[in-house]
Length: 162
Image 1 (cartoon, rainbow, N blue to C red):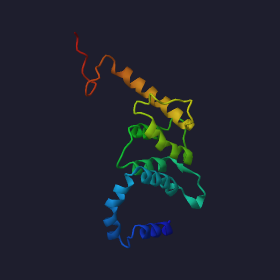
Image 2 (image 1 turned 120 degrees about the horizontal axis):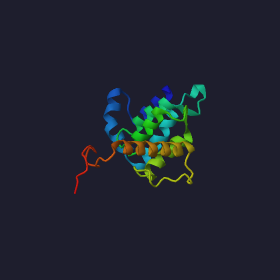
Image 3 (image 1 turned 135 degrees about the vertical axis):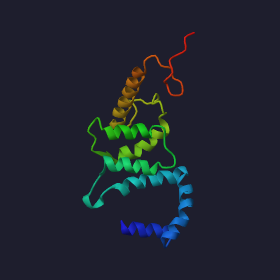
Image 4 (image 1 turned 60 degrees about the vertical axis):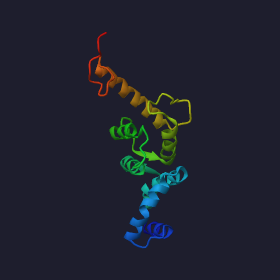
């Protein structure tokens, strides 16, 4: 890990904490570029692995923390639901594979916030099937819990009688 840190400092021409801090704003701007963000996103998975232990998947808690970190600037609409799903852990998830990690970025770019364009027939990891099923069920329960309430700003106002 130390070697990677020093190599990274060399790559950004920073030889001190002040140098890192000075470069940080431009690095954040650079990370907004789609290809650079994708590289950062994929690197984040490798960064989270314990290479000395020979890990091939991220512990669930580490993956959650890294998703929060890597999406600090640009939260995809389904991120909070995804992280809630992983936190509640309804299917006993212990780890996140590289394939699932990488495909989640595609998932956030292709699948809308209402998940209506998700299809189990597509080649998504099975964990995504479980997530979509869990989230749709959660939304259904939440909708039933509101009864005859409107979908106003807070969803708390009784519907107007006409």
